[in-house]
Length: 440
Image (spheres, helix red, strand yellow):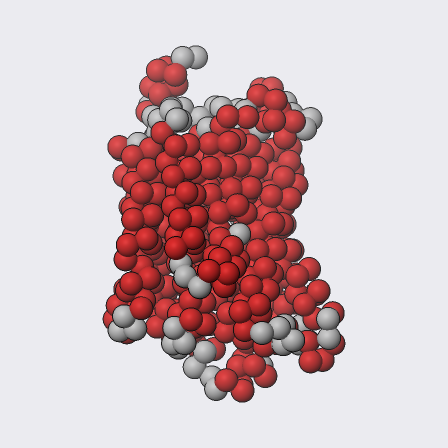
């Protein structure tokens, strides 16, 4: 079948979502919300108390670097989790791994809330923290690609961008939830926060992940994956097929994922630390900005996904990377340094409301569309995405904190960020437009 024939066949499908498709979207959205809450609550809470609780022997700057180093461990685990769960997803189906990833993430997050601090068990405390952070990242490595892929493969007609972006909106919802819970915990006195308040955001995961697992048990398997397996069988080792036949698409996804993840983690995680540690302001304002911005992002994600189905993926992705670089380099830190409450909130809200959704919403469909075989699609898109997220969002906060500590300024950090965005632009411009191409 030619591409044109495939396009006509896809256009001929129904465009209304069935009850099963709506149930799938709801389950994927809720699950993604919970997974991102689990993963990000550490990033929001860690700069406030974890240097004191788990690294008390280090001075302030080194303690901040250590805290972000533990944060980066979750990202380092993501490629491994992505490889393992993607292999299973391309062999057994998308649905089973979405249940397993949620269970692993929920248990790891709850366990962090039960950890004794350094004062109680010494060096074992940060070791256990690193181990559980690794488990969180391992689980998200499978989740963050599988959920939007299932939505895209289940979409009616030519609505892959919209369906995948609705699921990606769960990342914004999880961010809102995490920021709000940490914001409420931050209203406690410093003594209460260090004594017990920091545990509440982690322990809350025990309830919500059980709900999420129950909802996901109702999800149907991807029809495109089922059809491909029925016709041609599964690949024995999907990752090997990716490395042999899909090197360039994987590199494109990797570079795009570096740029996509950088804007959020540079502004929300490193930016929060900058406000608290460098400007010595309360975390209330930046957390409020993050919550407001991502609250808007829950709606702007599907809006950008819908738009990508009409004008294409490439224009939105290129615009997102360029605007992200311009905003961070020219406006973000100047707004924070005004120390004016409204401007600090605005500075933290803009990325979550506009810049991150513009790329995140589209990536949920663009990444898997680079791979034309459903039997290796999850492995290929997951490998590129998870490696890119490590090199982008995972390392960016710790690299930026280290550069600021070494130079005393933001210049090198901003240059580093601009280079990452440029790589994403080049990757997208070298890819073919995929919005109107049929899935197989």
